[in-house]
Image 1 (cartoon, helix red, strand yellow):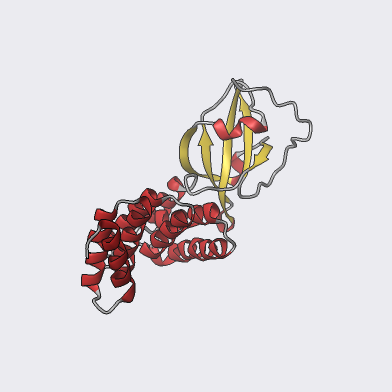
Image 2 (tube, rainbow, N blue to C red):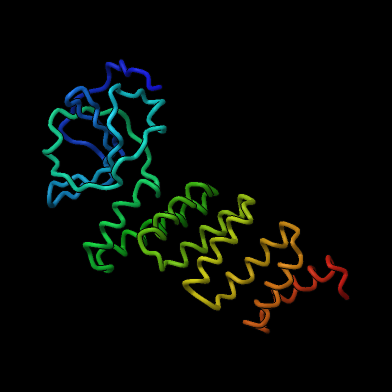
Length: 233
């Protein structure tokens, strides 16, 4: 049940910033939007739309809103009388529709710099040990450019740092489906299995990694460790 927002600081404004959540009150319904991107050259707001409500939600209710449409390009002037409700970080899930729009309407050379920007931001967040935020940034890169296996690998490493071993394995397998024969991904899957105590699966992965590069030291070292765990001399 939503509570009525009586916040007198909510103000009408002609211009919104990316991440702003705003609403229009029409026919006793509150139509609520989140600004994902402002395309200045065309005065176009790219917005995510929530399901209309009969009661204006409070700020604490915003995260429970149901999404109706993931992306719509709308003339900036099409939101007459709109009022600001709050501002929220734009997440990878928010951008699913906008990214699909870019893939369908633009050549990859136009939007790849955006994906690379997400990736570089993920690297920065990783260096700052902000692993959850980095995961979201890498997810944005991989969602916009599904073949961006480097972003998927780095997302997996962040999950490893958080102890999310099985989720990391899923990411590395996704990476391998794009970039088969990756020593990094094959070995890392083994390391994840080793951490979970699934030594049989870990041994299989380290053997695969060793086959890919017999000169690499890490697979050999981990094979010795996993064999010791399995009692294999």
